[in-house]
Length: 451
Image (cartoon, rainbow, N blue to C red; front, side, top):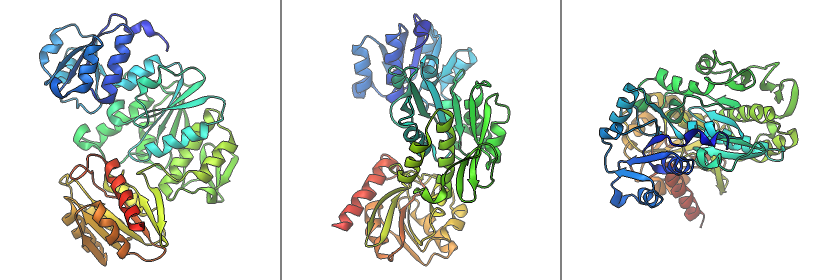
């Protein structure tokens, strides 16, 4: 790691644990920082805090007292999920104390160059594609961020012979000051996380911080088809590398005559792509641009294009049952992600949708629902989705309890050649701890159906 001495003797408050807080605390302690950890969970129930305390790190649990700022604090490392309305964060900002997230810490220490990927949808798929495309390139890729390991754990084993491929969120990016990737990828921007950021503009500004510290030796990989993305990247000093599924480009990555080109170099026919959907084609173009910029060879890129069938829970092909294809898109926790998945298929779709009710209507979901032949709906939002499906003219609408009971009902509503798609358009927390648990229950129910 570079400049390890920069944290020696610094007074650091780590606010919030989870994976990023725990890893940041250990790393800063190891580098000679004077670390205080503060977590809302009481110490009696807090295994992470107990372990850190055993290692000699000061731990204060059960609340976030403002008195923590009466002690010397050089900077705060904040869990990304803690909003800036938190009283300690608000007071720290007023006092001029730096507040950042652990990807900032990782960037300050990394010997390896970083490719960072963000966007409302498609981050994990694109990150995984880039990692696989960089295999056999001469520099071993390491995955970090919201996919894989916490970034400040990865930087501890990364050298100049590695490339860190880092999925980053708006929550993480908002807490950055000097974060400096070699390649910064912005895929798209839709309405999301407005409960955290307040407005779409603030959400976009957080995403756009990824470009703030690029130099003319760095690259900004930009979706030319997105007006908002183009606007957020307009003032970057990085070299702009565009990708487009709509417009042939002389420079960048695009589609010409049903073939994928990087600049004027033909990479592969579009027909070689096994991932369904226009949105996944966008992800692939962004991944090709990033991987090529960092030395990936065409043979490996073509292999990935031909074999990559999706990341678990993200439009993941599960199996065929009597000529019905099952897809798990449990990660679709908003309407935009769900409708993108629906439009990815030409065959008739039987849709499984529902989940946590966040108070929004589903009127904007109606155009996508007009494309499906049947809707199986569950969870808190089942009545709202049922009404939207009626408005869309869906002929078969069935209410049920949960994902598990929805699977056999979806099969009964399908015919040979149909797509049975879990794309909930809602968060999972009304019935499941995570979208991963929801997706796993879907897969288990399919296996039960097969048997």
